[in-house]
Image 1: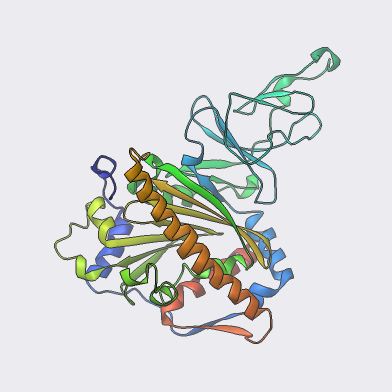
Image 2: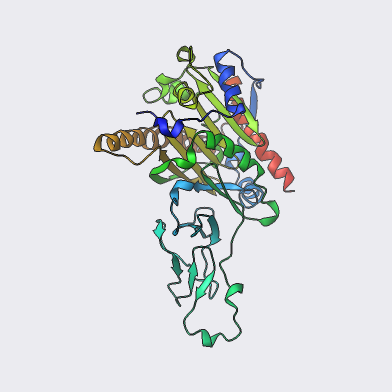
Length: 387
């Protein structure tokens, strides 16, 4: 169907995106690693996973969801998969917030379930303490029974967050809440118009594999024409890739060289037809812009061998006809149900099963898998930084 011209009109890629596209068009490859190895224990050792969780997932800024999950003012949605009860809201001024989903009276879970709610007020189911979606305590029954209570002191506990480029980030700790790289990445996502996209589908997968095994599949092109031979593999060829780093975050591009002649690479609509970008973000998120829609995936490890992956499919506009809806349904079924769940996630599970036997003490990575080694180096650096 293609992205509507109104959404792409006037948009151009960032300098970094354009540089990768030119690499592909002109046959350049950035410096790569030779054959390397990764120890199997980083996937199979529960103690190593516990250190990663403490140093990375419990400390660093990370993506929670696309802005399209809560597009309108007066929306709220619980989020539990990070291991803490969170509540994402959008207030009357349009600002996104991330709170602990906990009533300040007796600690009761404030909003139940996991669906998006449209409401201006959040009412505790236990004693009906009532909050605004901006976190303020608005009212409580029998206020005379709390003669010393100042409502301004009992607002919801808010965690550091930032909305940029159509994504909502949060950080578990105030002292490590540096969102400068999120803002930098947001420039690319603004160029893709991600903040103007709407949510079409959302699904959470439970994968019986280490979170890094899932990320690994999106950090190399070696598997694409093989694992995905019956789905998306025919659209790609080995070697037509380029990539770089934005801090610890990886940005890659895969091009269809035979289609790039006479393409204006500075025109985002034309560029997206011939180059597929992908973003592999620390600690565990993936942004994959297809030619006419965008997938956002967040990885939330629950154990060394179990990961929740939430997949969001963003499309340029709400379907205006049954034909349009059918088109997007087929795209969703191909990727979320087929390529991701049926192939990439399944490969991670098979890898976890094999590595847990101890038969392979270290993974051997070829020149086309250098992105995996770099990703593991960023993980190792985060562990060192946390002490």
